[in-house]
Image (tube, rainbow, N blue to C red):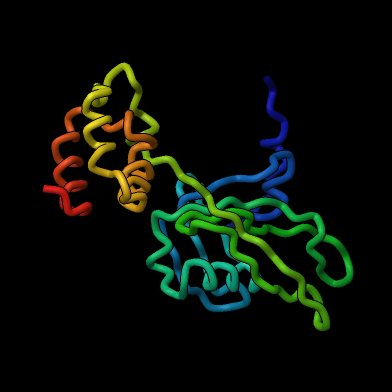
Length: 198
């Protein structure tokens, strides 16, 4: 494949909407957040940015503060999905702009009322972004031994009537049967402690 899309990237010191031409979106993981002077007061570096940080517009800064809070240092390690919105208007012309569609560290969609013109506000929805842990990405059933059916049954008996504890375990491992055998003893002890089982 000869990827000609690499030849149309604009020359700039930041990520631009035109950088997203030819791709539906891009997911980035934040490595640094800096405050700057001028019209673009926030610079967000991310893994593999090649010196082209994301400098969000005021609307997207409001999204970031609403969803992740006002402490930029807390953004480091978190991820978001950016996309090109063809309908972003500047000076009466659709010029395109970068918008955020998904963000990590939220469990349900967040709806905000963002200003589109001086007299109009429209709802803007940010959806949860599920980011797989690196260890889970590298982990395969071939190199990990999981608990036995008898162990799964034993743990299931402990968890009866404790849906919240079961949900936490499933969130951590994907399912009861996917608990690594090497961690079973610790998981069982913790489950008994949380469920009040002797």
